[in-house]
Image (cartoon, rainbow, N blue to C red; front, side):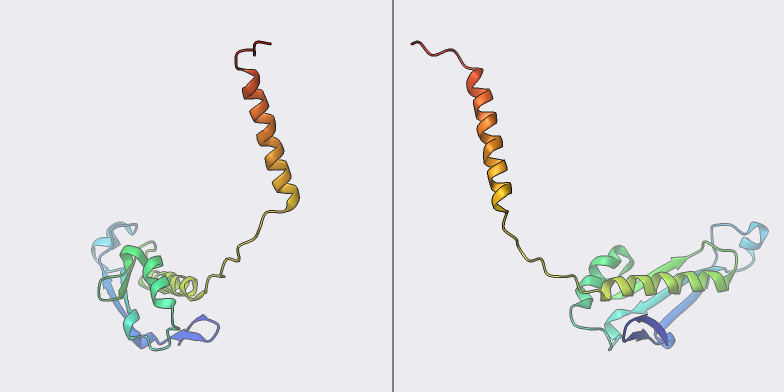
Length: 139
């Protein structure tokens, strides 16, 4: 089990890991060994997902999520399979942890009396400046 957030974990059996040829660093080794990792995680089959997390996960994952709800993470930063695998899992856990956080509801506030007075005083001052730009009144 891989811990994601408080009371949330994913089973490693739900992760599908494939090793493919990388295009990054590795020298001659890059042509011989499949070091890049393609990690797939089916979010729709994850039964422990709290309500509301699915929508946040879809929004945060963006193009990394397929239409079937499978999150695909491609890692090729390192020269070894093991480090790329760890990197992909860490990125998945970070994504899931961010989606697990329920945003706080915004409580609307009213402007203070002082801020209202300052705003109106500023408007009056600005109106006076504009009034002075006009033609002088005959009188």
